[in-house]
Length: 307
Image (cartoon, rainbow, N blue to C red; front, top):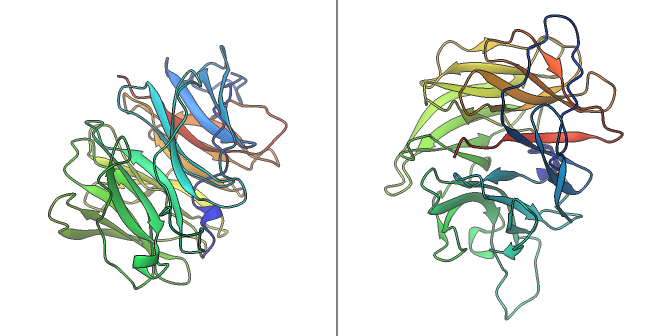
């Protein structure tokens, strides 16, 4: 399964140029946003001002996340393929590799890591990856935020396991299992006991994530799923999997949602312009606004925590 479709490539946190799509466009929340584009991570104010390059050399089609205090970013590095988890300070300093292959052998196809996400207390980072001991099958792992104490959380060999996302209170870790033909099951797992429950089943393109994330208050989940013409659209549902509601209705691809810190808006990327740019909308799907105008393909947007 191609990991490249799961979370947009190269973490670039780019500026948000506040050019709307019409008079009904809402202003983005007063905060900082990060997104992927062209093998780099940038930060910018949500109105597009003060754009700053954070780091280059981010893996093509990699995942990334903010630390809870907004001081660091965790991402996947490796260029041609997802390989290892790194952290970097938001100002670009302190680049540190957290995951490593054993020193006594060369890298194998079974060695890769992707989609790192910090726990709400900042003590742990969850990610999905494969190791020799998992038979090359993707599983969910946990490690301390300094890269130590890595342990395997899941032991699932039917389907493809990926894309962890913490609940706001840290009591559950949501993850996805892609079975076949675009069927994606969402689960919540306890980070200590490993007890898991199924939240919902969604349908998306084959070998593609639902990219599901909890709202800041933990009552809802935003995700992507197949729209009327098969391309992904952005949806929300209650945290128990009920009341699945489609928010976008574009014939183009709308993907990879993320909530603003106050829960009033959702950012995502869309191919509506012909390439892919970042958009922001109200959390009910109204007042959709394009906020980037870049000469490359933008992906994987992440809002900076309130801190």
